[in-house]
Image (cartoon, rainbow, N blue to C red):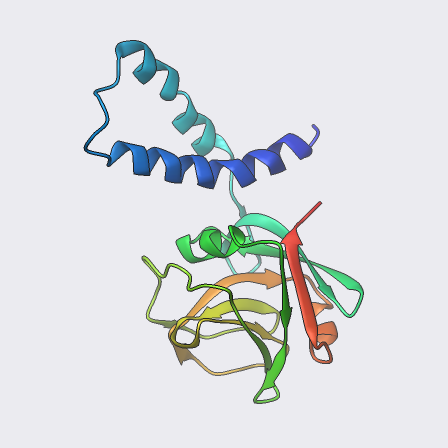
Length: 177
């Protein structure tokens, strides 16, 4: 089976769901006709029938992305959280990295991300991509770091990514081709 249509669907479904939520909440829209209701019903089951992949840590993944660090391409995945979906909506991004505590690289994001339903904090692992809400920053980990309040895990890099990250000054993040 060709995975390309599934990747395209994975990119479109979050936007379509948001559009449905926004239009359903509008007070000024007329009630839907019977034909409109029946035409919108199949979208929901189609979106929910695709099985979610899981990482070795048990975190559900929603989107494959590609990181470019000093010319090296690194595969990564984003999880299926509202914060990760909001981050994915900003892609592609090219960000300047700064080292923090010789364990992580951080970068300022163009806008704040939604933390709806996010845990109070997280204990990052080597290779994790995370959002540090108090400073509106992407945090990427190349060494172990302690639990941090306000940290939301977004996804994880493939093996080898953390080594490239340790010396990188810039990161480009985009949807996987």
